[in-house]
Image 1 (cartoon, rainbow, N blue to C red):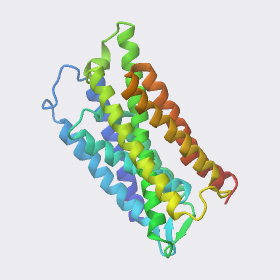
Image 2 (image 1 turned 90 degrees about the vertical axis):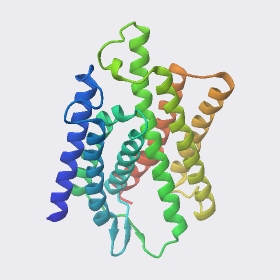
Image 3 (image 1 turned 135 degrees about the horizontal axis):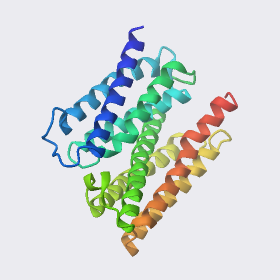
Length: 273
């Protein structure tokens, strides 16, 4: 019962943080971060408290006596937790808090699904630490590249408004287009590094990355790596930006979505393995 209450408050605080950020983004266009009772640091503090409560829920659902329970909705909640944590910490020093309007309520939904459908896909507690490290690197890479995908969507909206000479509305509250692009490529660069480490650790510590139950995830992850690596190379070599960067980012994320979420969804919820 205590876990349910903690989870409920985590969901409420995620929703509240998203609403407060939306209010600042869509309505408080003439105010600075120091105006009003809900300043940027205070909103981030509320979000981080939600992250703390979420961590308590995760601890009880992930760590079971038999080992590590990484059922579909538990894994989804873990990814959401990392997305929220990375986003809020980054927002302390970078203008990325607007992404929380879209991401934080989704993380709250992930908490609700985790409590409703905890699943039962347990890794033996005796399994190698290297395998758990591989899983953590994979989740970190996916989480960061998920944030990059939402950043790309926001960048696409901003680019469309500017091209159509409609710079008003919430677009005025966003950082300049060049800053948004720079943040996007920083996220992709770090995400690609983590994805590289994930693939490397998998090749070293998994018995067979191309086994029947892993082959789709492995191939799709490699394709996503190629897409993101090509994007960074194109940025360095040809100065790719704008719509080109957005298309490549969303394409890479879609492939990664199929690799991490799609394959796990089919394997566990459809095939019941």
